[in-house]
Image (cartoon, rainbow, N blue to C red; front, side):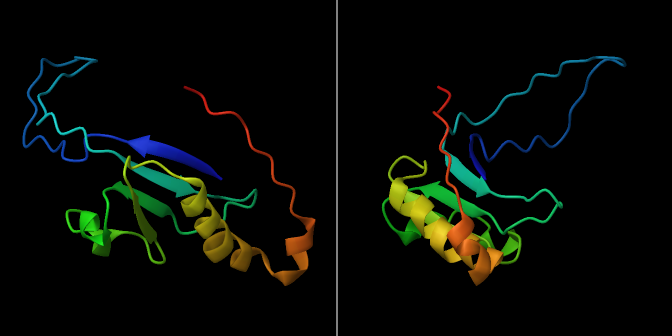
Amino acid sequence: MDETGLLQLDHKPQKVMAAKGTKYLHSRTSGNREMITVIGAVNAGGGALPPQVIAKGKTRRSLNSLQTQDAPDGTAWSWSNSGRSKQGIVLLWFTKSFLPSIGADAVNQIHIVELPAHM
């Protein structure tokens, strides 16, 4: 399981022109720095759980600007003031998404390891 923050969700240049062989392209964006966080989990066999997406906002209305219908099946949506995960949201993901996916027999064999954040 890992989480990652994403910025500049509206970066959609219509056309890009550059000299042949150019390695680095620069483009203008709107400057919108809205943040969302995605929690994802995969196992050693390549199986993946639906993601948890956390939008910046105070209420469910903060999800209105996102195209939630285009997300993978089972995607869980949350919001927080910063757009980052909080203990309550991660606990929700853990109990509603992760635990049901592993089966009742494996629940007592879970070892949680939390690594320090890289800032």
